[in-house]
Image (cartoon, rainbow, N blue to C red; front, side, top):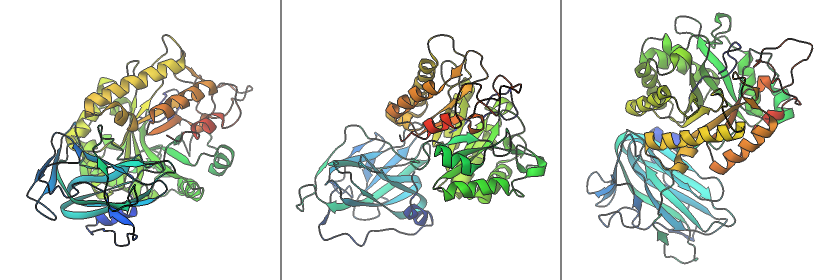
Length: 493
């Protein structure tokens, strides 16, 4: 976040979890019992009873085994490494405008079951269980959809998992009883996904002359916000802006904002950190203490999303404690999404940012999206749009290397964050035209989120008042209120 104003912008970081997944996480089996009369099993080799992976396109670490098996003589066994989540996928012919149910039995840590290419909203579900646990998800195909891909996989660095008794039921593509299945040439990873939170703008609810949420929603359409920042007010106590007079425990102001967002059909994430102040991970002292501090914020606002904006002295510091706490939170809050915000260099991720990701992988902590601060690296040539696109492209290649992803998967786990108007770098300027051009770029790459710092600045500066270069309460460019927010909210992925 820019350092020119107090907490001016956010600090660095960035599965669909259906109600079925919540039940599964509690250890209850989930199965489909109401398939219509014309529903048939569409998967080829659904229980791996051929003794191999016939019909499936799988990672090299996947194999059919005789034990453990949930049903029959064989099951799938996969080993998720730090660079490969061991996916097995199958593409199946389907009918348009039809409902399908995907079920299966899984065991292991963070095992995902889902679908992609549905033409509507792709779905997924997951569980962590030492024993066999049932999973189920349902989707409806689009008006022109004739095939979908279903998949099962583990999660990075979580080790061996099992899957068995997989089933996709619904109308066959031909209307007859025979299943149609073809292996997919390139598995498409879509989990974890967060389609309900695609354009969250940063907002400081207690600093930099905040607008009312009701005004923001009515005039810009934005109902997804990253609320900044929660810091330590002393003794590992979470507080807004680190202010002991405004602890999270005593807060009513931000709580009202969160309630208003949800009433408008949106939601909020809370960002921990920022460039200034004392981040909880620097002072809580232990994994358990830090996890407990973060958990207080999650419980207070009933969060399913958090943002880790570790900047300045906190960047790549105390990582064992920090990622240990995040792993604990993900275990205790199975539907929690985590973004990691990282400041950029002119060639993408800094070495410290790469190291943060490596240590998350090593610790077994999941990062759902890496949120890149695509500004403040300084414009040396070309246009602002070209520079931002180039940095994002560099990050894409770096994430492929760090995780072993293909380019599409890396984009799907990348959040692009801009800054409106003047940034901390005098060479940089983001106008409405820049935002619109980068919106087109983000849409073409299908990134996880398209965001910016911040709504507080989304208004023209009063010419009768002296303002900072990158002022915390205005953009320093000609604009109408909420011009930049209106662009961000157009992002659909």
